[in-house]
Amino acid sequence: MEKYEYCETLIKESSDSFYRAFSQLEPDKANAVYAIYAFCRTADDAIDEHNDLEKINELKNKVKATFEGDVPKDLLFEALHDTIQKFPSPIDPYLDLLDGMRDDYYNKPIETEEQFDQYCYKVAGTVGLMLLPVLASETLKTNKAKKLKDVAVELGKGMQITNILRDAREDFMKDRVYFPTDVIDQHQLQIEITRTGLVTAEWRGMMEYFIEKAREKYQYFYDNADLFDKDAIEPTFIAAKFYESIMDKIQRKDYTNINKRHSVGKLKKFFLVRGAHKELKQRGLI
Image (tube, rainbow, N blue to C red; front, top):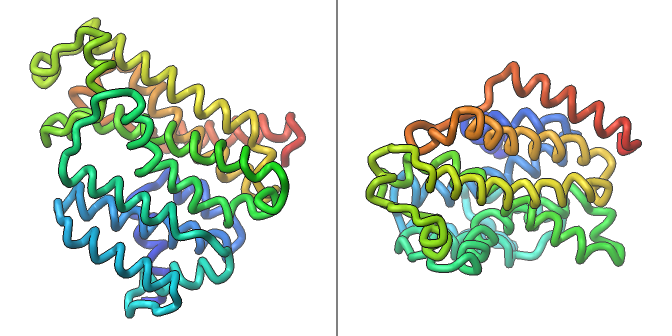
């Protein structure tokens, strides 16, 4: 199997939302997104599916070797090396992501909102930084690069909050609590009652709190989408809309994300794509 074909297959099987959004890019950029996604998916699966710290250590060694030019005999890292040759990138976000996966392995408690924000940076804000050389190469060369990085990190954090809300039931079943203790206490949420699947006023209140926090991060991206390359604005905008709509579904279903994993259907995605295209056209961004 050709290296990028392997990565494309992985994103196609794992995330219909990202695949539908970024497959619109021209081939080199689309392949680069697939390679970066494949790396992130492999790291995530090492913990979520296999709880394998050795795999994380192996990925760390392989990614360091790849950036040094000593590419492992591995389709994923062959694709990643080709990607960073075409779209030069620092290694730091890749290592930070793996550090976040290590925190997951040890089920490191998240006590404060500050720790929660840092966790979201490690496991998702970093992905925004990985993608910037592919999706916003022009602005990275300007004095707006700092703001661009901030926008990308915040979008990644918004998506991670959405992930946490979407996967709440599965995480509770695995005895993982990603919500910070200070926010749980603030909303007077009793975790043991929540584990039973009972949707309480306290649970609804905390969900609304995090949904509002995530929406602010999505809006920050929407307001600054012009910082991205012209051909990447619409795909990134669509990816954000797909993800944000998961929270719409959670709200419509009365916060029953503690009982089931809510997702967005194909018809809804069709209308989201149309809506995103219309909005961007009205704003003169496409």
